[in-house]
Image (cartoon, rainbow, N blue to C red; front, side, top):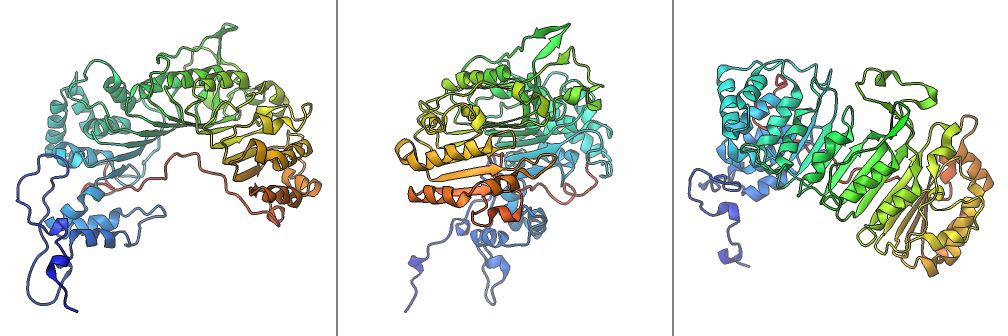
Length: 535
């Protein structure tokens, strides 16, 4: 059968494109595949096929970081560089590239700076200390000064001079990178100590989110998600994030914000964000110690929350076990940290304003100091049936009811009817047999109250000082009975145990990640940019 040429129209990359200097994003010159007689070579492959082949090249690390493969291909010739440029510069990760060479590249080529979509950096004492200091050349200094002059920010000369110093703070270079990457959509930060009060990258965002223009610095129009591993930052430093109109997802890991006590009196928390003004839809707070009034203020500032994940812990509290942790003694705080109890009624009231938009609620706790357990969990959430759109709920029995004194039948009446996935966290403080009886009642009558329920998962992971709690629960309860009751109504049961024998008859369920997005790949710039001598 003869093949007709009109059945195979040219791919976009095979069409002739006029050669001109690109002016905007997406207009990087692409040369057509080379035509010649004889055997075909890699130069004859269309761009689309080259990109597909690139996906199968061996990665550099476990998260499919293909920087080495992409960089090698980009150095073949101009055509290959143009083909992979979008992938080469899409992600910046300070682990693989020093900030100064990357900043120099962003300032020297505005088209390339617009290709950056994800930025991941870390700073603080000892971070990247094994990396040799990058020696700034005269040409480098000229590029940096020209780049800051274009920004036209107040005192731009001081910014330029500081960045050109070989002992400058890494955070300052990251702030300059952010100021030149207009199209960044995802930002991940590993927070650490800096020489000044507030990190410079926060200052850039604060100015960008303000009403008055900050020179020619963009306003992060495409930034969708921010993930921060909290070190020294406090919530008052992070308030500018809630003013970014494009931001949808915020993850703050390890935030500690308790009520303060100044001269023996409670010091009220001040939050400067107007109620219902923030566009944030997903608020993720794993491994945090936050006073419930503070959490309510955060929820109140958001216009429509779709996902809330909050894990209340006490191991970050500086006065745990009646002593001040050494790593808090050097902090210049204007008061002492008080208790941060998890007050469920306060949280329930704050969630009520989001009842029509909330789809995913994770609310659990991990209390280490057992003596104060009952004083750090106050009240209950109450009924969630008016939140009609929740499809996934992860919580504890303690958050919903007093399982020791209230009838087990109440549990199923408190849950939203729209649930498809229900996860209960069970620790050794709970009256575990009463919990299991409540689940049996749910399994029998769940079809009436929870018609959409598909999965029931149990997280049993607490270990006491004297015994393995999950092993005790395995001995005292027959999970096959619960599994049979659920199966009759089409609900799957998953149990996460702490020993192999615990899941002999029940499938193991892996707890979901707290991160809203998968860890991004990290790619960056050309050969001198990705050398290990950048700082």
